[in-house]
Length: 397
Image (cartoon, rainbow, N blue to C red; front, side, top):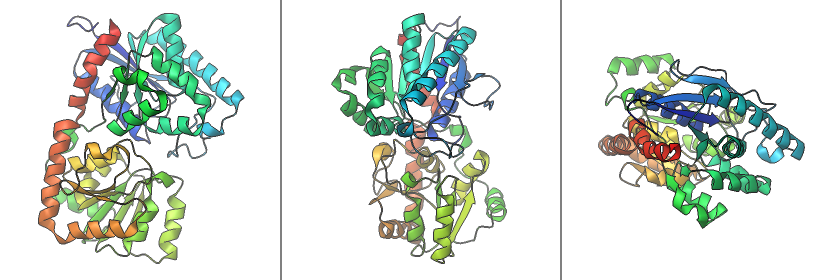
């Protein structure tokens, strides 16, 4: 129970390294914001030795392997969950239980917050059965993708959902898919709490000197810039942005890494495209500055993106966005208000909407202001942490 005298001990139980994906950023920034309130002690348990904040208690989970739901930078050689044998699933589950029990013994949490509805959710259900520690689940969307691909994971996940005090989903679309897959019995305990940004990291304007520094650092031209950032995996649809590039009246910048990077570079070479720059992976501080340098942000995703964090970040920097109407993006983007929707797998649509914004700076600026207003009102970690407080409070009784 939360009180003024006693801090609530919350353990974030995560199944990937924290860097490299939107769910990892969700864990990191929610944990930091909870610490900022001074009402929590927070531990983070994951298969990652990286220390994200000295105020957090970090616990490394030593696992036999780290499978993925979809492609993920840093885990290019990892198997997808659908590729695991029965023996591999059993070994992973047993190892995760053993490691999680060690962490529980050291940290002694009052609430466990599980991120993803897979092995770590099964483990939390086991821990509650044995130790009586309550837990909540957060569905990030890509976990559902893996379960829909392979029903071997369905039953254990459903049991974990039944044992949870509450379930949250990062978008309304993800919540709908979750309930459709597992049934209406979970409707009452499932709510939508999206990810977001730290408002202090996104000032209203960036000094011209900083802009010029970034432009010079990466050798960018003085023309209009359309930006994509994120994992270079097939689900992101970046190849359609490259196909659109020859029709875009400006420069296309792609920041990120992943298994598709070589394929995309070959596309650029074979098509003799001269207005695309592949930056590769850049650090987060530089990435934020890059949002401000860009004139338009593009997310050409071809799968149901739960709610792309990079879209929210670009909007926080005051940029209009051109995105496919896939997944949870409609929570933040309103067509013609703070961005434009384009058809999936359609390079012509991408080029048309980007050029419309390039040709009309006043429209781009107006839409960018609307984009920033939406994010500061609904998608900051301060606001999101407030929404988790009653969830933790009920689970801690």
